[in-house]
Length: 142
Image (cartoon, rainbow, N blue to C red):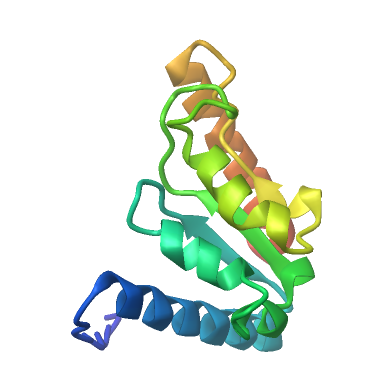
């Protein structure tokens, strides 16, 4: 049986939450790259993580320099079914706040193709992308 340990931290405000999340992102990225050579992450959308993404990309914070961006692969855990340039697009928000600000290779960004008008087909296509990319990134996986 898998044993899971939770480390619950209480923060006082959104700024402290973003700071703690950025520290955790950097720690997990370093740990994953050291162990497996890559770091994969499924991004959240909405307004809550905006300040985290901005902080990670900021020139004034030290986080940007600590992340091995060329080894990070980005996926989306959720997305609104709107074009990628739409104001409600989670991809657009991440692109503006983070991806366009850091040296991430374009081939490391695996977004949901919401341009497809058929929601079910877009979801099926993303499922296929996830399978192909994650098998490729995880040698020995079936």
